[in-house]
Image (tube, rainbow, N blue to C red):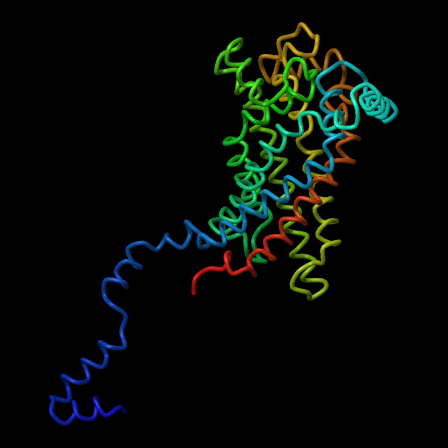
Length: 340
């Protein structure tokens, strides 16, 4: 016991002194009251600002890298999706070669500037939202049920897509038109505003929202579940980069397949009037029925799916693996560390 306490014991009432010592050891009452009054505060925000910034940065890097790698395949898929051309690997290869010969190598990345303008904020928001939804729904624990992991992924996708949707529409329009019509993403928005008015910016919004539920839900759920299973089997705390890439590829494969018909619908609605078809593509049901009647299931509602089975796993694999690796690396930098 310190000298100050010994002196205090000699000159003070022992009972009074004991109360003072207990008061010094106890936390302030107002702090305890705040914690009791706001028990949900810990559920609302999982991390501090530096950690959230790390998630945003890693998500942006992951999305940009993944989409740049598969941009030529993505543009080819959209061209077939919005027209009545029957899809096959030879036809896709012919389109890539023709674009290269007629417009040069960079034509294969046409619309990629719009893709970057959309995917950087989209991926940053989606991955960061997923981290928060995981914490809020308690799916960041190994024993979390699969259904809750699916819900966390779906909510993350909905959060990001609802914020960045007009950029997705602009990207689709640039991908299916010649440079003379839309030279930049700004021109897309200006021409749409002048000729179609504001509601045109949300053409295809509903099928996009419906499609992102199974896509993001299945993708994130598969990836997170595979990481948990990997830890149980190997005993290692985290998979290596190659394993992360494989898990992401499987997640992308399942996610793309689950949501593909709605992807066809949203592309038709987004590019209505630009692909030489007189059908207006006004509603989800009408578009589904029209595509089914005129092009069938495999050649219509699932047109280009084989291309997605190539580009989808590559893109999602790169995206998920890059996010995990970059997030872990960024958190080691002083600027991204939480204050103690």
